[in-house]
Length: 226
Image (cartoon, one colour):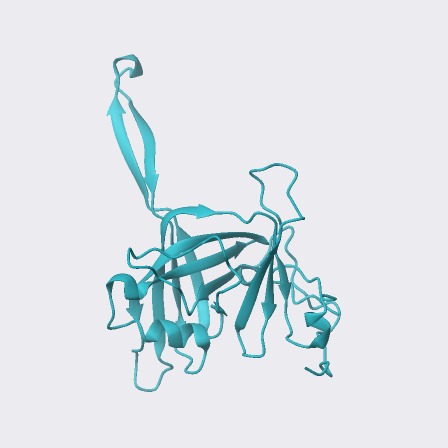
């Protein structure tokens, strides 16, 4: 592929420090998940995914923990209760306007009449440059709607299934020749100082010869200048 004749303007990349804006966070869903007969999706190999960036037409992403708690009063509590969190269901509520032709939205829209394993996939969530991956279910899909003279609404929910995982190295998401579709790779030679720390992700914004050669080392959500 020929080298692109344009590049991002210097100084326009996003800032992930201080008070970062929400658009630095990125969500990628696999639009071609390999779901086995048990309804499980593999999390160990991310290179075989077709990762659609959930962004076009999206105005809001709201994560929630949906905690399960117990409240018990013990004899040494003096009449007050102790609260324990015994479980969590991580979800991300997505909403915005319908954009026909966007890979992520088109994938979700096609799930509207489906259920069971058909609505299961996997998600990569890069939050302030730090990535995790999880199995997930796409639910509560609103494919269209609204006033006659307004843009169509669009919303859905990403419900994590089971324990999320972190990457055993540095995740790189690289733009492909298809708009808003990324490939994923992990460099296992790049480790965090501690086993439980997350290695910052790398986003390669453009699918051109320069990006393919690995010269673009922009971080997540930055649109790093070349």
